[in-house]
Length: 266
Image 1 (tube, rainbow, N blue to C red):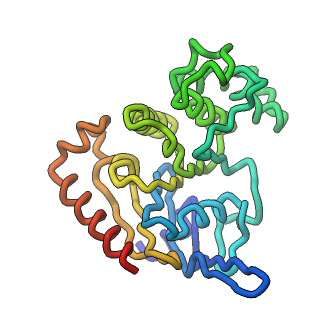
Image 2: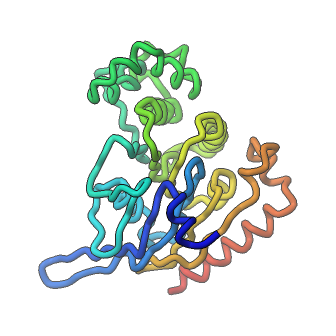
Image 3: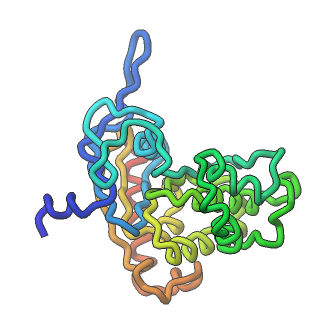
């Protein structure tokens, strides 16, 4: 298949994108000529050393930052700012404390006037998907950190975005809760056939969830390599233990960690 045909089929196109932040007397090139594509129903992980511009790239895809150069399109439409077609889950807990779990998940639907989805049980469907049915009438302060992130995930999914964006969504969680959330996310994105772009600094998380890993070099961020792990396409891989038992896991983890070390020296 030609590059042009691949781009035509791609849900998301990031094409030679750069971002320069300008101050009064200086400017900083954060990202330079970053290009990759994400086909529909695949998970793309943005990975790389601290300060490589992962979150900057994600924010440009979300429309929260405007590229200095290049272009970003979703299904052929230019990304010019935030839009409902792109849902976002942040690292911090973003539940509204004055709303119950159910009201939080329904918030985006009500804001967009999507009362048909509310009547059709969309909220209940995604509450069940993330394991929150029993807590539908609870308040956010009554929930653990992991459960509050489940609320954020359900709220983003309920709006049925074309593209789900996640910025280190499990970074603030303890280790046990984190891997439980990783496994939950893997289950949900398989079931809902989601297209996802996710930032992480966790190599194991990247290998478990990603159909492709876009590895960015140290500052300024450029695409050093694109990796296509075999793990997510293998339906037998459902847990952290399954991943670690795979014969290719140790080698791929070692290679990525070596790249991390190399970039950290720059």
